[in-house]
Structure formats: C-alpha cells, structure tokens
Amino acid sequence: MIEVKNVGKSYDGNPVLERLNVTVKEGEFVTLVGASGCGKSTFLKMLLGTESPTSGELLLDGKPIASEPGPDRGIVFQQYSVFPHMTVLENVMAAVGFAQRGLTGYLFGSKRKQARLDAEAILTEVGLGHALKKYPHELSGGMKQRLAIAQALLGKPRILLLDEPFGALDPGIRADMHELVLRLWQEHKLTIFMVTHDIKEGFHLGTRLWVFDKLRHDPHAPQAYGATITYDLPIDHSARQPAPQTTEQTIAPLLAEAAS
Amino acid sequence: MKRLINLTPPPASKLFLGLLPFALLLLLYVVASDARLAENANDKLLPAFSQMGEAIDRMALEPSKRTGEYLFWQDTASSLKRLGLGVLIAAAIGLALGLFTGALPLVHAGVSPLLTVVSLIPPLAILPVLFILFGLGEASKVILIAIGITPFIARDLQRRTQEIPSEQLVKAQTLGANTSQIMVRVLLPQLMPKLIDAVRLSLGAGWLFLIAAEAIAATDGLGYRIFLVRRYMSMDVILPYVAWITLLAFLFDWLLATLSRRLFPWNAQGAH
Image (cartoon, rainbow over all chains, first blue to last red; front, side):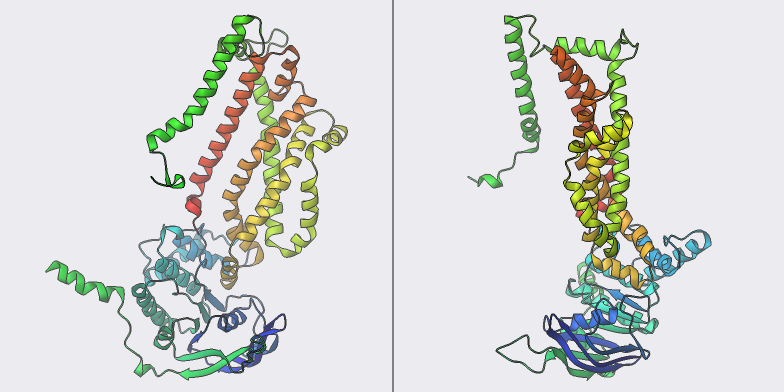
C-alpha cells in the first residue's frame, strides 16, 4: 500500500532523514520510536503531506502521495486537534460537512439529521455520548483526544496518523486510550502510523515497530548525517505483553474495597 | 511581612481603593470651585455642580430657542450615528482584510505591504483631502473614522488569523475541507470575538477622529458643541458633555464585552 523508496529529507542542506526504504501493507499498525529530533515526526508529516521528501519517492498505491493533507489520511495531534469554537457534537458533524462539496461546509435538512445520527453513534463508540453539548475547553485531556479520534474516524480515512496522541495523558487514561485505539483499528480496518516517545507503548500497540536513529555519526559535524530506520521489528501479537491496567481495572477493586 | 508583590487587597477594600481616587478628585474639584466662586461669583473656570445641572437642563430638557430642538440629544444622536457608521464600516472591511490576508499567503504577499504603509498615514493629516473629495457633510466624518481605525483592525485580525494553530487547518483538510470551508467554518467563527476585542480597542481612536472632525466642520454633534461653547468659556456645558462622552464610551465597551461573553462562551478563559 505504501512504498518508501530511498526517501531523504533535509532542511537547509542539513539532512534529517536519509535512505529510507520500507513497504507497509494495508492494515498494519506501525509505531515509530526514537530520540527527539530523529525525524520520526518529519516522516509522519511527509505521510500527512505538510512536508515533502527532498529525495526519493513516497508512494501510496503506486502513486506519489499528495503534497497537501487530504481525506484519505486522518490525523490526531498531541494537542490543538479539535475546533475550540464547536461543541463536541458540532466538531464531529463538521467532519461530515467538510466531506461535502460546497462553499461553507454547513449541512441542512436530512443530511444534517443523518450526520447527527452518525456523529452521535461514533461519539458513543469512543465514550463521549454524555458530553455532546460541551465545548473542548470543558473536556479533560483524554476526552479531547477521544473527540479528535472520533472526528478523524468520521472522515473515513484509510490511513490514520497519530502524532504522540497520548503524550500528555496520565498513565491510567493512557491505557484506556490504548484499548480504544486497538478496538477502532480492528473495527475500521485502518492502517495506523503512530509516533511515540514511549517504547513500551510502541511494543504494546504496534504490529510493527520502527526505531529511528543515525547510523553514521561524525563527532565533528553532528549535523552531517540524517537518521534512518535502524530497526524494523515485527511484533508477534500472540506474545503481546499484558496491557497496563486501565483506569477502570485500577479503580474497580479500590471501590469494592471501600464498599465492603 | 510578605513581599509587596504578594500583597493583595481583600475584596471589600478593593472596591474602596478603586473608588477612593474618584472621591478625592471630586472633593478637590468641589473645594477649588467653592473657593473660586467665593472670590468671584461670575467665575467660569470651575463651575459649581448646580451650574452644570442648570446648563444640562437648558441643553437637554428645553428646546433650543433658535431651532426648537433639544440640543443635547440632537448632538448625541448625530455623533453616535457618525461613530457607529464609521466603526461598522471599519469592522467589516477590517474583518475581510484580516481574514483574507491572514488565511491566504498569496493575498498576504500582495496586500500586506500596502496595508502596513497605509496604517502609517496619520488619518488627521488626510482630513483636508477628505473634505475636498467628499465635502463638509456627513460622509467625510464617517470616512475619517473608518480610515482611521480600519488598518488597526485589519492588521490585528490578520495576526489573530495567523495565530490559529495550524493543526486545526491540517485537521480540517484531512476531513476533506476546501479553502472556503476552512475560512467560513474554522477561521471566521474564531475571529468574531477577536473582532469585538479589536473594535473595543479602537473605539477610543474612533472618538478622537469623530471629535476632531466635528470640531473642524459640523453643525451639530458632541464634539461640535464643546468646541462651539469654548468661545464663551462655558465650562458648565463642556464638563458635563465630556462626562457624557466618557459614560457613553464606558457603556459601549461594557456592552461589547458582555456581548462577546454571551455569544462566544467557548472563548472564555483563553480556551484552546
């Protein structure tokens, strides 16, 4: 589905990424890990279309990937992913409006009703059914990310890009989100690329884990060489490590204890 | 003893501290006015509050002997019409300019340098040009206000548009939005509270241009009146007029702030 052929990226002559050669099949869940500044986010931006490779080819179904964001690739950022001036429901309905042609992206009549039903369904699926009328600033970090994911899913992307989506969340909430992402990945048959700082998270979620690092290093010119994928590890799912406890699993015994 | 920067007044005394300077100024005025009037009952510089009251009675509650109009209300209506129209035009043009130059790099490249230069022209310096082009009527006053504050609003909104996180624009594109949909649904609604802020900030300049234009060429208006009665040293009219203008300015500011809070609840407490 995605072919990366000898792709390199440099800024002002300083290479960030070089000699990337990988192929990704439909339905894979790729996690990207590596030190800060190793180019994993840059690679995600190239998939997204906000950055273009300076050399080599990045192909989606045999054609060069568009150099601007499009509806086939959904995105969830660490923050600022949702529209602050729309309620939870409006945020998700906007995804339907944007998918239509037209000048304003507003929906009317039966289309609006249908969009509302779809939006409510997906919001219930991600666990936000009780917060339809809230504005994003009234939501917690985890709920905001649930909303961002719901919004991205309603755009019906083939590829979902996650840029450190859970980096700012508490461990318990994080585990909840892992469960959600894994469930949605299977239900919606997505191909997911996820950048993360947390190697454990990378191993837990992905079917494939890429480590970005520099192969060549010149101590006198640290900028001389770019990073590449140094490890491409397939992860056997049957051997998946037990998931960290979700909030519910953590709290339920405590509640039971308090009740007795 | 706490450091000075950590000392905050308790709520009750906060109000007291805020009102204190007003009371002191008022007291100072009354004492000074009494002293001058005791020396010379015809002194015009610091009229007593009773004299100001009589003047306002005359201006606001009795029809003018010459025209039969209630001058105070006539002046207020004329001035507010000019100010309102000027600010409305400025807000509309400023919003359009700010949105388009902020959202579209191509438009930005073409329009922004011109906008920067135009914003540097002192508006009062081109008032004579306006009088020559549009005559001494209403148009030139309204246009002066509009020209005076449009560049500020436009540049402020341009910056505000650029400040909207690019993540939102990318997100909208990944949902399939085209340029106009992004401008109408993502950028424009988020600019509206910023527009109200910009209008609030530019109302002071708006009053300045209004009063300047009225002082130079008008037959009515709050600015016209205070400059007219200056010839007779009628402080008893000028001071209440200035207080009235201040009150109006305060009311508009408060109204706009309230409107912004009501209409855009998501904008509260820097929500992002």
